[in-house]
Each structure stands twice: as structure tokens, then as C-alpha cells.
Image 1: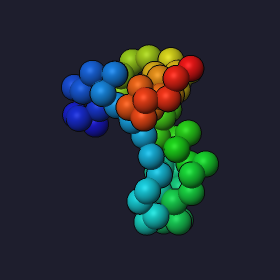
Image 2 (image 1 turned 180 degrees about the vertical axis):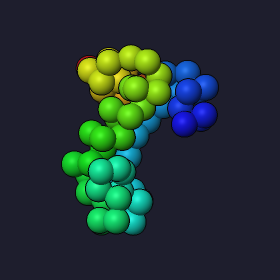
Image 3 (image 1 turned 120 degrees about the horizontal axis):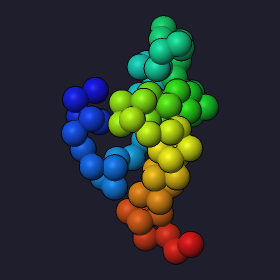
Length: 70
């Protein structure tokens, strides 16, 4: 939580590459890409912003990092 809290929004990305570390409430199950929504919601909560703002920020960050034009 400290990392998310202290890292600037424009430097955050999310992924689901840890097959055995599913987020709460799916802990103990195999991780699935659909669970990234839980991660995004938790990051938004930690940053004190809406889930929608976090989602938009993550998409914008990915487009910028991977040099994908809008």
C-alpha cells in the first residue's frame, strides 16, 4: 500500500501476471485477468480517487508507455 500511496499516478500500471496471488476476495484461487478490476478499485481507494479516474489513468499510462496513439 505504501508504494501505491507514494507513487505518482502517471507512473502506475496494473497487470495480472501472478497466477497464484489473486486479490481479495479471490485469494486462494488461481488469478484471472478479470480480477484486475479488484486491484484497480483497491488502488483507487488507496489514492483517494474514484475507480473510474483510476481506470482512465491506467489506460492513459499504458497508451503512453507503449507509444500507442489515440
